[in-house]
Length: 147
Image (tube, rainbow, N blue to C red; front, side, top):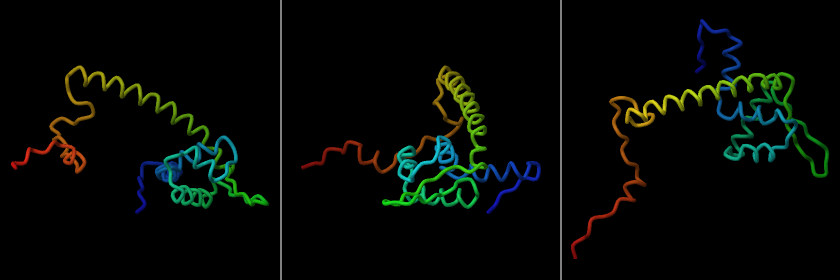
């Protein structure tokens, strides 16, 4: 389902739909350093699976943000590079980094304030404690069994 907000510019919404997908922003930012082979991208984004990386690169290529180039071999190599539209993300990435700094500072100040009040960090007022998961249940000491 595609979300739309009448009060926001359609171009803004188009850009956000690209960035809203997991890994897209990180892949584009990684390719800012220049053309990279699939494995090199995967090394820089070590938590992404090959399947997800392949899928995202195909999507970014279809959107005209990434160019896939096959280099003659042997061995045949494939590398990915940002197009002019993809390189336009550089300024956006810098702005997001600046905003990230502000968020980190704000969270640090807010965390210090709630810590001073004695409240749990990140807890909502009136929120119940989470139930322990299966691992926590296994970790509990068992009562002594009568022999």
